[in-house]
Length: 184
Ligand SMILES: Cc1cc2nc3c(=O)[nH]c(=O)nc-3n(C[C@H](O)[C@H](O)[C@H](O)COP(=O)(O)O)c2cc1C
Image (tube, rainbow, N blue to C red; front, top):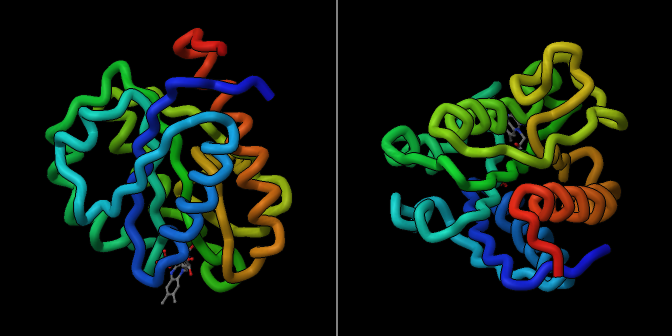
């Protein structure tokens, strides 16, 4: 894996029971091992300026209550809608429970993806649905082969999380370096 220097990443997460924060920390640790600098920000502390401060953003969101948006992200919707992410790279990760909520698996990541695309963000990091079992997901494409970002299931498949994070981080750094042509 190529090391990327001078990549400054803002990782914004929302959480109810801390899983999405913990996964953000684990993603950050792997990114740092590849030479990146990561600032981790709870969405409750984020503002329009936070979005402006970074060229590369990672956003993490869990799904709650049958396809519901985590409430701090919901509160942030107004800021998102008023923002412009043109020329910014965004990678998404979503937390969910595929066996408990298989008709709504990581739906909120689909909601966030739609908003980010609508405000001009260049989304990278789509992730194969291989190895997951779910009926429906607003974060998956029509034939359910790909998610719009990394899906993490700490309730049912926590043992796969480290491998998924490692693979996804390699992927987003490779996609990012293609975008900005920044190879160190
Ligand atoms: C009451 C309840 C409702 C949930 N609803 C969904 C859902 O609709 N879709 C889904 O994929 N996961 C659902 N989950 C699973 C959570 O998204 C999962 O536990 C996640 O790791 C929580 O992240 P957090 O700790 O960052 O809030 C639900 C969990 C609970 C307890």
